[in-house]
Length: 89
Image 1: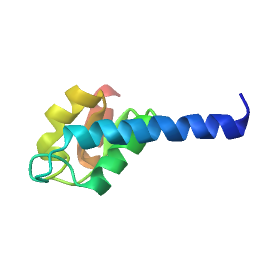
Image 2: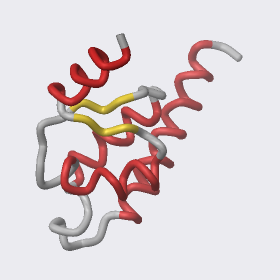
Image 3: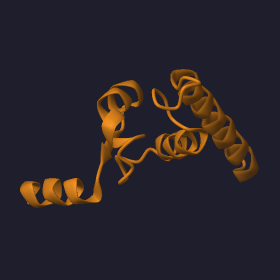
């Protein structure tokens, strides 16, 4: 696969993930994610990150249990991740 083809495939995967997140999100942003936050989550999932770091209480932290189950990604505050790293050391 050429690098151009790989980039196109990655872009389509990202778009599919965005669509999945948008479907999960409801039109009422208090229940789902705003478009920009959904894009951040999709990018993190697409890049196969282990942890999405955020201080966004209303959109990520308060919904993390549901988001982590649905999208198989950890969502943590920076301070929480530091505590987890220190506890594991």
